[in-house]
Image 1 (spheres, each protein chain N blue to C red):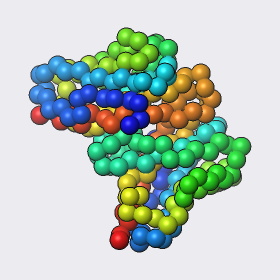
Image 2 (cartoon, chains in turn blue, red; image 1 turned 90 degrees about the horizontal axis):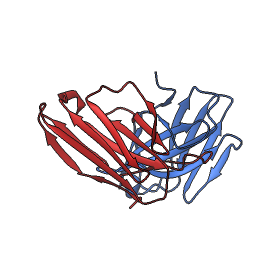
Image 3 (tube, rainbow over the protein chains, first blue to last red; image 1 turned 120 degrees about the vertical axis):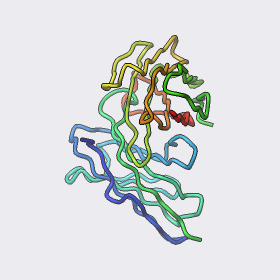
Length: 112
Length: 114
């Protein structure tokens, strides 16, 4: 089966609230994780990444947290906006190159 | 735009047709990938090309045939497909020799097999 998966298939939040999207992975050898955003009719777009030697990384309005003890990854979006509505995927990578294993995806819906 | 271009964006084909999907990357990468994305399912890795050599084929049926003539171009040749092959086919590229690097995706080709 898939080694990367998401806890919730859908998430609905109010505009302005913070969103938290979760991901579980099972391969302890994975050393690099990425969050992708996929809007309707488009390919996945890179949001933020984190290496396994870190437990937190911040971007613009987004934060990724990595808990290697329980093999858990989360994406936090601050002040969620309607433009954040999309499907979010976590992906893991082992070693060189960009070969990625993807989780199921969480569909984020932002209510105005 | 991500620098990875896929054509066509939409394709409808019969089960007896032969068609090809095209992918071109303008990022100077040397690894390219085909992924299949079915509704409500994770992206499934189909093929990996690194330095123009196929390094992975994830048990994909022979009715899908990839081709990588150079590091910038990737094709997926399709023949005698089944309706269950209808999906979004995504191409991606990355730098093969680089540790911990993301893949850049195209917009995908929405394939419908009738």
